[in-house]
Length: 141
Image (cartoon, rainbow, N blue to C red):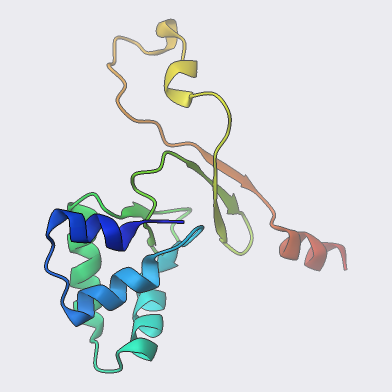
């Protein structure tokens, strides 16, 4: 599970009621919500929260490095709270569902020196694509 709220408290980030609700909505495993989904869920907990506040808070969390912005295939950006837990993403090519995966090995060290072309590689983004069980079942029906 993500430890987003604890990380924000540890940073001394001012947790207003609006910021706390956004962080609560984002906290958890396999959370990859769009800004609109964050707003809808936050509004259930704090009806007066505005869309602008959600967007601003998400922007701050990304700037702080506490949330990762995930973009896949031109779909809406999604926000991943597992910024401090190395992982890759598994994306359904049909519905866009995203799951965190933790393959063995390191894609950073798996790139042979001859394929680095003199680059000093600092990060790697690997995205696995396929069909989720629900989409597979729908296609076979």
